[in-house]
Amino acid sequence: MKTTVCLIRHGQTNWNKCYIIQGRYDKELNQDGINQIVTTAERLKSLNINWDIYLSSPLSRAVNSCKIIKKALTGNDNNIIVRDNLTERMFGIAEGLVICDDVYERILKDFYEGMESTEEIRKRAMNEILAIAKEYSGKNILITTSVFPYPLNSGGAQAQYHMINALRKKMQISFAYVSTNIKNETALKKEWPDVKFHPYQEQRPCWLIRKYRKKIKKLYKKIDNNRTIINPYLSHSFEGAIDYGFVRFLQQVINENNIEIIQFEFANSLNLAFAFPDIKRIYVQHEIHFIRNLRFIKDVKSLSSQDYYQFNMLKQQELTAMNACTGIITLTETDKNILNEEGVIRPIFVSPAIIPSPAEISADYKFSNSLIFIGGDQHQPNYEGIMWFLDNVWNDILKEKPQTTLFIIGKWRKRNQKMIRQTYKQVEMTGFIPSISPYSSHSIMIVPILTGSGMRMKIIEAANNGIPFVTTQVGVEGLTFENGKDCYIENTHSAFAQSTLALMNDPNTQLTFRTNAFKKIKEAYDTDKLIEQRMNVYQQI
Image 1 (cartoon, rainbow, N blue to C red):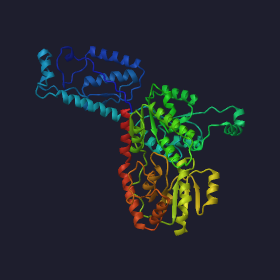
Image 2: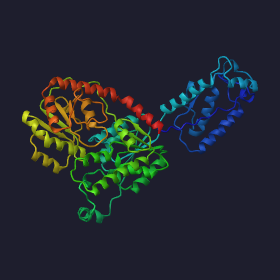
Image 3: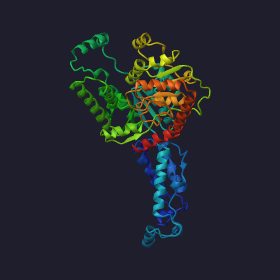
């Protein structure tokens, strides 16, 4: 995060006027010095910058200079922060000497006893400036997103919510979004009273289009000659056209709030990077969409040249949009390496999502033939993964454990809910629930993720709640969980079924996985460390 620092020398003292080395001698401003600072304050006022913090060395000439400036800019001279490391250089026995060529040459050579060396003062000054930048970093950042972070009904919403919830205590956050649900927005505003909300009211299409929307969509499908085998299943999020009404709205927010950095969350917002060339632009990459698409097409048996063209076009669009950003944040080291290998030239920083961890996991765990899966069908990897499990694994589980119930937690379309209930035995669709704690004391989580990228929040949530889990290699991609130590990691349906059954039958392994995974989460995803990591990113952008 960019921090703007203005360095101002104190006004003149009588010793300055007589060319006497002051050093740590505490000399007051003379009248010329006061006039100099008044003139400086007027110049600062003309810049129209709202300074957040006023800092000074402990010497009175510096403190009084700072007070004059603050009063001119704000109307009061209260709350000047004194920092010892901003104090003048220690000149040792040279303090009080009149500056002449001989004295000056000796100072340049660090000659005088008791004098801070040139290297010492350089290090002290730089360290103090960096400390100030870190401590008072990030006063103005605008975050815009296509996924509203409330309620916490998806991994993306969780990742956003917990990070912003922590950042708002460190900096001024402005949050811009397309308004769709007043109830959710009102609830979040109560939780985040110090965040500036900027809802955008999307322009509704004309009444004629609204009236015949469905017919228009059907007609488009009939005349669209470019539809391919895989086109409907590929992620097109980054391909969307820029909503210029929203762009104009964001520009107004930026201008009125002195925004220094705009942060885009999710690929749906990525093309906005082209619209703001004069401001620092950060893209938080929750998922690499061309990796999701690549993993999908590998399983498609018959692909046309048009299919490959579609895939490559979408991939290049995504990479080009990333290179239009000032910097990119990935949630995992794996995704950073992929983007580097694919030719992203912008700085890439790893900054994982935050999930607040309890002090310890519950000791009252007892498995009771309950499996859970978390994820809605709006996210294609969720739908693909659970259908793979239901079609290839579920019957093997029921043969050995006929009393087992699978709970699918998340928001699903009615048609898919109906299909699953009619097709598969002992599967319950719970819909979205605010917390998985009712299942954390007796369930095993399955995470059959086959495609996608990013950081699997459902796995973090399982470990955080002390729920043992079985997943795939893609599921733990970018995480540090080990097969047989923290969880089971299986990629074939037969191995997935065997490991799930083995875990269901073994209380000792359940305890081992719960303990080890939670410990790893606590160590690797400490909230304070992750916030410091994200703040360091903002300072480097």
